Image (cartoon, rainbow, N blue to C red; front, side, top):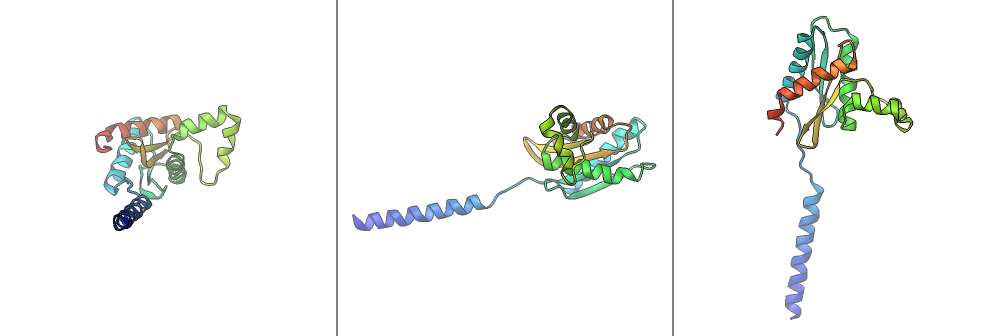
Length: 164
C-alpha cells in the first residue's frame, strides 16, 4: 500500500505541475496585416463614397499600428487623430463614440479624457472575433466623429465573415 500511495502522489504532483504550466501560456487571436489592410482600405472607401477624405489606422490588440491608409486630400491632422482613436478603442475595448457619450453623461467617466493617448471622439471601433477584441480601427477626417464611426461600421460589416 505505501508503494501505491507514493506512486499516486507522484502522479498527482506531475499532473498538477502540467496543469500549472498550461495555464501560464495563453493563446490569443490577433490581426494579420492582410486583414488590417482590408479594414483600412474599406474604411477609406466608405468615407470616400460619401465625399470625405479620411485616414484610417488599424492597430492590433496591444494598440500597435498595423497599417495606415490616408486618402488623397485628407488633412495632416487625420494621421494622428485616427491613430489615437484606434489606440483608445483597442485599449478600452469599446467604441470611442460610446466612450465620448459616456464621459459627457457620467461625471465619473469625465476623467477618461486625461488618460495619455486617449482621444474621445467618434471614429474608433474595436475589431472583434466573437467577444474577443483583436484590434481596432480609427478613422479621422469626416466632418464629425459620428460620420467617421459610420465609415468604420460599414467597413467592419464588410469583413464580418473574416472575423470568425
